[in-house]
Image (cartoon, rainbow, N blue to C red; front, side):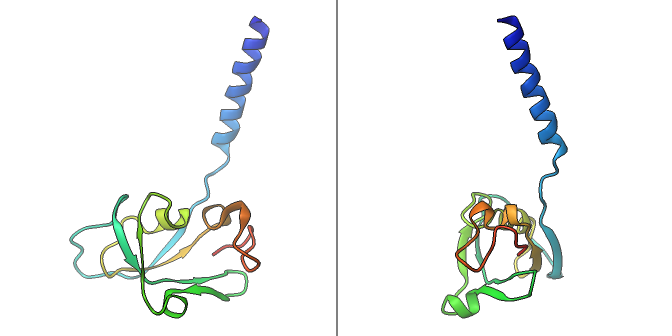
Length: 126
């Protein structure tokens, strides 16, 4: 019984070490436009209204745009609660009203293991 318990503890320890060695994917952020004055930066729980264009990095093709596919209307979502892509939750924190950013989102923080329809593979950078 002691040997079994020791093996279980050792296995959990090794598993946690391996998990710690694998880097968490990160969103690459490029600030394209920032207002001169920023009174408040976004944080988790904020309700955001955004326009966006989504392109595939592999060939630059547009897969979605609020300007073209949403009757030209921006979309609302709550930051930090996974209402949108995980990459958005990371990449849109700390923004000012009127700021524009370019996000490069790795697959794990984009559409995940399932991908999205036939057009977005699980391996595509967004």
